[in-house]
Length: 351
Image (tube, rainbow, N blue to C red):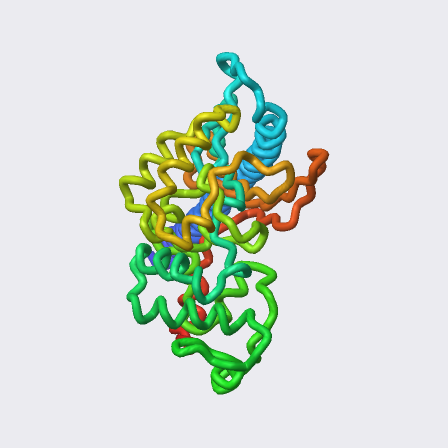
């Protein structure tokens, strides 16, 4: 009986062993399949990510070239305006662009760009401000939301920064103030070379200079490249309203009455409206035509397809009498630096 049972017992053990081997093999197969699925999904995700990255990079490059094309378009429009400012007849489609910051849109195949041009002669030159004319800058500051006492500090400090002496105005600051800061430096005591230099002046902040969110800064209304007089034919409304005696209504009327530079009556009409400016400030505002040589700020923003955001380029160009030009400022991409500077500064210690 025992000898008869041994083959059966051996057979059952072999079946158990065989079943165990099959179970292990099945588990190994499942593990291999799982690993392969993870690898496949990883490659699929990487491929999708790289595809999206490549598309975003491609659209970014296209928007950059489109924005740069806008700068070239702006230069061409300036030259066209200079060549046609004395034309008596303007054919339909041949109108010149306004040089007062008016925004123009140019459509392309699957995108578009916007261009605005501002004649620097329509801005406030901070280097030509004096104690008597600085009220224009103070008005610009208060109209933009700066408190009157803060505006006094900024204006006097700007005058102190660029004058040659070390005498401090009532609300101003000279080297003794700046040397007392945690990061000391001296007042320059010569003319401003760039508008960004204003951030070194007591009281000035990135929010005031560049603006924040939808609030405009004052940088677009200031310059270091023009003469002492403001050209009302190209001045933005904000600059016109900073001139004592020119109300918002008068400024709106001046802006809306601007025709092409070839319209001889336009300058005369504007000059008549400027009579409301108080002396001696009426002598600081002129309604002259486009000067044969001068500086212009061009801003171009490009939009491509369904991609979000724009690529913006800013440039300042100086023209000579023979229409030759040179870049004196070029920023690509141009972004509002308020958030980065405000976060890094954690508050200003020159206020």
